[in-house]
Length: 191
Image (cartoon, rainbow, N blue to C red):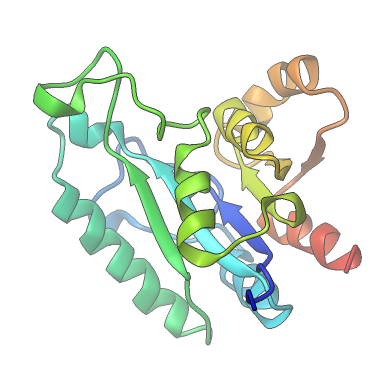
């Protein structure tokens, strides 16, 4: 007998959970967007898995290493622990199709707007994509969520306000929220 598949909220990292900083990789430069830790805790308390899916082309470009990304995620977890919560999984795409070196310069299926990271997480964590959400601040986040079969939500933090017209044109009817806290309230209201 198969265990019931779980619901998840996939979160973009930069501009959705934390303040957007170009090629963020140092823990000392990390800062949460107001309300994000509480929103993550509320999603977890409601029974959702919370999975981070993040494009990190800074690895491909040689700006920082995969190990630096992992250190930042360890720092994020330690900070969330102070709020009584945590992320259930981190998925990163270190590739870029044109800017990058070596094996990282590749057109891959994991870089958002492709759904590869979400599909891998769904396989790893027994996630029902049709009952899950993707929340992010870029058109690529909405594309990835749609391609994976999730309900995709845009937040205006980070690049969201800039990308909102493109999202509205490409994916009419996409729900848009000021921040992760507001998107979380919408998700939980539909329980």
